[in-house]
Amino acid sequence: PSVYQIDGVYYFFENSGALTSKTGFQVTNKGNTFYTNTDGTVVTNKEIGGKVINSEGVAVRKVNDAMDQKAQWYDSDTQYLVLADLSEHALRVYQGKKGEWNRIKGDWEFSCGAPATRTPCGQFKLCWKVDNDYGWKTFEKCKAAYVYWTTAGFMLHTILYDKYSYGDPEDADIADDRLGMNISMSCIRLALENARWIYTNIPHGTKLVVYE
Image 1: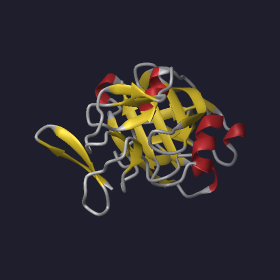
Image 2: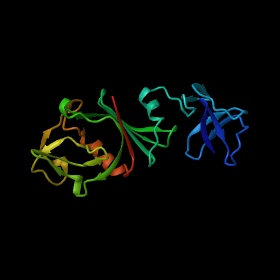
Image 3: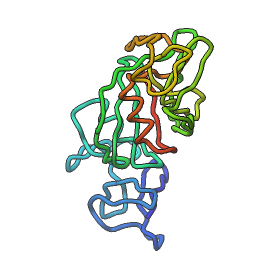
């Protein structure tokens, strides 16, 4: 099944190519949920049956928290989704699928890009983990562990440690453990346990949504 817009109205077509004659929630081949009428039209801009329907007819689960509601509108290539709110320095991890995301981690406080090197907003993917013990990466004057690259070119990683650190970061000397601030070169810095959890549990291809 598919949905098409014709003269400003959305219509739900069955696999046969015919307009649907069903009333209720239906799912397209792309996995989006819509509420249809018997004349084949798609309902827009309403709340029905515990779901919120947007201007394009897509229906998602209604939740009371603003950030959790925002998550419902996004898809991901994996069963996980990560949202980072720059204005609140808060990161959450979700599990499920579009319209049915459940928060499993967060709020996690983080630091992000300084004014001159702002963390970009948008939809990205977590794409590559530094492949060594503890995911260490060396910068000019320091190191970070559990480094996870994004398709936007910035990284998620731990707070900063001494440049000559090695082995378990639990035993490393901390260079900068400030969180909740705009101080990085665009990377998102997390507490050690939170960066380690993402590095260990979140697969490549997971969508990261950054906004403010």
